[in-house]
Length: 220
Image (tube, rainbow, N blue to C red; front, side, top):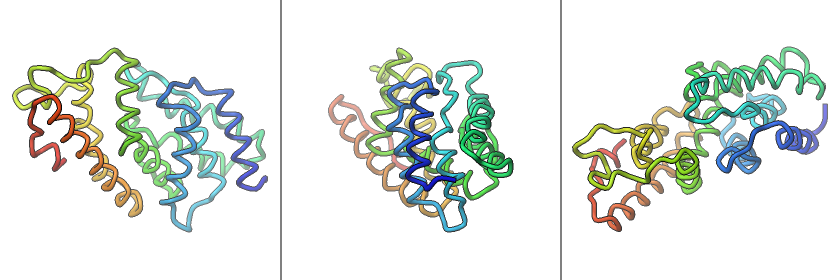
């Protein structure tokens, strides 16, 4: 098995050749997820399994509005197996990487059962928070043709939240809730810091558009 730097270089090339990239799910996303995973993973992880899972977790990346979106991580896990065999991984480690990949997805609803799976899930969700998370959220919403916000009620004070139509609603529906769901201590700490940055952004945005940020948004 290659050293981590050599293995990472090979995995980056495989991901570049094999994944359907968009601006929110590209090689820089994979690089950030790996950096996050290294920052929060404990000493009990298999570094090569975690590295492989980080770079192959979006090998199958379906659009956010796809009816099969919940299956994307399972399909990515299946696609990763022959890649890992070619790289010399044994079947036990392939299975470990596949579980981490399948369990990373918010929509899949698969419980992470290993240190590698917990680290990958937190690392991927960390990239949905902070300044990068803001940029990625608007990039995805723009690609899907969603409005920035409801002009009459930007922060859903008197309407139901609908993040399929309004980008700002996604902050309240999902993103600001992520810190509470982190599985690692390091992930929780980083998530809280990054969520605070998002709150500051929302406060500035509210001021610029002449709206009030409801207190429950900041307390999500």
